[in-house]
Image 1 (cartoon, rainbow, N blue to C red):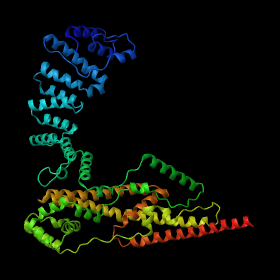
Image 2 (spheres, rainbow, N blue to C red; image 1 turned 180 degrees about the horizontal axis):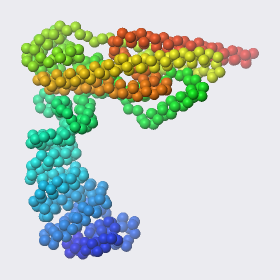
Image 3 (tube, rainbow, N blue to C red; image 1 turned 90 degrees about the vertical axis):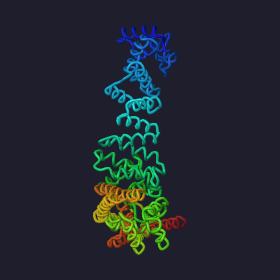
Image 4 (cartoon, helix red, strand yellow; image 1 turned 60 degrees about the vertical axis):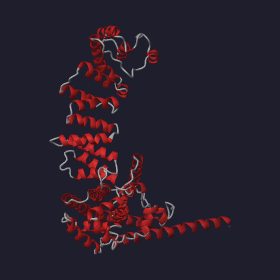
Length: 540
C-alpha cells in the first residue's frame, strides 16, 4: 500500500484526469510506486500484477480519509473491471472489514442490508464467513442467521448451516420457503446416517417435505423432493430409471426418420422393423411391486425401523412364523391404504400383525414375452438374423405387406396400452400416493419407515407419470419409427400388468413377427440357392 501522502496525490491526479485515464491506469496509480502510464500494453502486463491483499492505513485521520476514497474507487471501478480476480481474493470483503472497523462502526439496518446484498455476490470463503458471523453475533436476527447459514452451505460446512437454519426457523413467525429448501439441501448433502436416533438426515428431509403444505414455488419443491428421494432410494432402484440420450443422437435419429418418411412419400418401401435401444432406454421404466419388495427385504435399516414401530416382542413372536412381514405390510398397504388408519395404538398394531401373518397376498407372475423379450434384450437381428434383399426381388412386396401388418399391429397395441393400461395405472398410483401420504401423516408411524414408504410410492407414481408423457409425445407423431419405439416400450412394461387382454394381444404380435421371420427365411434360402446356381453355371 502506498504511503498516505503519495496516495493523496495519486487520488487527486485520478480525480483531475478521470475522463482520459483508463481503469488500468487508475489501478497502477494507486498500487505502484513508479507507474509508467506511457508504457505499451505488453510492458504494463509484465510490470504489473493485480493486487491480492490491500493494505489500508488507519493510524491517522488523514489515513482514514484517503483510504475511504480508495475504497470507493475499488468498489465502484476496480471490482467490476476485475471481477474474477476481485472475488477470488476477496477485495470487497477487505474493504468492508476496514469500513466496519474505522468508518461505519455502528451500521444501521439499512446499511447492513446493503452489505449483505453485496456479500451475497462474493465467494463463500473465510473472509465472507467472518463478516457474516460478525453481523450475526452483533445483531442476532433471523435475516443474519439465514445469510450466514447460506454461506456455510456454500462452503460445504453443512452442520453449521443446519444449526443456523433451525435456529432461524424457531425464531420466525412466518415460514421462509427459500430458506427451507436451502435447509433441506444441507440435510441431503450432509447425508449423515443419524440426524437423531433412528432417523437419517435424508429421512428427516423427506418427512419435512411431506409435511410442507401448499408450497408457493412448486417447481423448486418438486426438484428438492426428487433429490431427497434419489438420495434415499438404493442404487438398484435408481439404476432402473431411464437413461439419458445425447442431443446429437436424438438429432441423428430424427433426420433418419425424416428421410424414411420422405422416402415413403416418393415410393420407397422400408422393410426394417425399427428398434432403437437408445430410444427405448430413454423411456422411463415403471417401478414394479416386485422391485420394491426386493429392495425392502434387503434394506436392514428399514427392517429395524419396522421392528421398532411394531414393537420388539410382538415382532419377534410373529417373525418366528413369517419372515416376510414387511413385504406383506407393503402389499396390504397397496391393496388398502385405509387399513393403516387405525394404527395409533399398540393393540391395533397387534391386530395388523395377526392379519399380516395370516395374509395370503402374493406377487403375481410376470408375463412371458418369449421371442419379444429376445428382441428387447438383443435387438431385431438376434431374432430375424441379418438379411439383404435385392430391390427388384419378386418377393419383396410380400415381405413389405407383412412388415406393414406388424407396424399396424404394434402401433395399435401402443395406443391401446397408453389409453387403457398406462393412463389408468398412472391415476391409480397418484391416488395411492396421496392416500399413503395423508394416512401416514395422521399416524405416529416410525419416521424412518414412513419416509421410505413415501419415497418408494413417490418414485413409482412419478415414473408412471413421466412414462405417460413420454409415450404421448411419441404417439402424437405420425411416423413409424416413433410409434414403434412407443410400442416396444409398451411391450417392455406390459409384463407387470394382469389385464386379461394383454396375453392375446402379445400373442397376435408374436404371430406376425414369426410370419415375417418365416418369409425372411424363405427369401434368404432362395437368395442362397440363386447364388449357388450362378456359381455352378460359371463353373460349366
